[in-house]
Amino acid sequence: MATRMWWIIDPSAAHCFYNEPKPDNVDIGRHTRNSVVPGDKFENRKVVDLLVHPKYKGNQGDPDVAIMKLERPSRMTPVKLSKNSNDAKPGTIVTVIGWGKCSMNGSCNEISELKHGDLKMMPQAQCKNQLKFPNLEFTPTVEICARDTAKKTADCNGDSGGPIVKRGANAAADIQVGVVSWGPFNCLAGPSA
Image 1 (cartoon, rainbow, N blue to C red):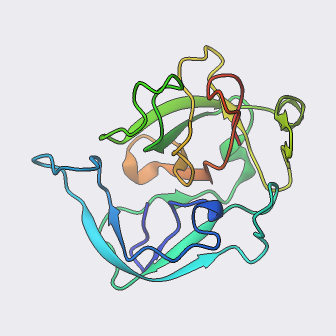
Image 2: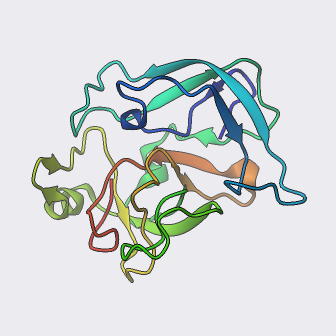
Image 3: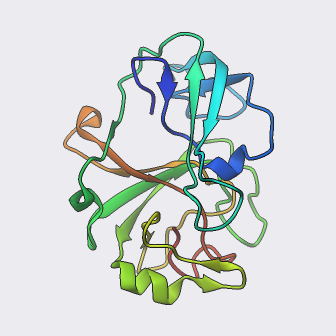
């Protein structure tokens, strides 16, 4: 999730920072929110700059991505960024990772451990047809979408900015194909972009 240089490409969606002050620090590789688990290795870095995509103006359909510049580089293994649209072709299994809700009934609004789930990439036409809500519509030029057709796993409120990753044979072979941005209010009701 971080480059060995000075930039974190993920996480985040631009809407997490739009018209907000940049965060002071970021934890890289952390798996628990409020405690440190023995053996859990993470790094804390000062954020010196935050760049929101210049075309993001707070509207749905704008490129919803931001990057952070760190005071010093991370030593964590970086996740490669996709350079090939085939990495996210329909039917590809991807993993979403985030700190969002684990249910819509309010039984666990703030989770303490980072969660992940596997979703299947959907065809653009199907995304455009199924992702229509008041003031929200899927934009195929800047968005991809995925879902769990069994409706057991979904990204949810609070997962925005988390990575969408095509898993490789090992962590060094993982490829990030996107960033969680939005989806239906009832997280399991449909696909998310």
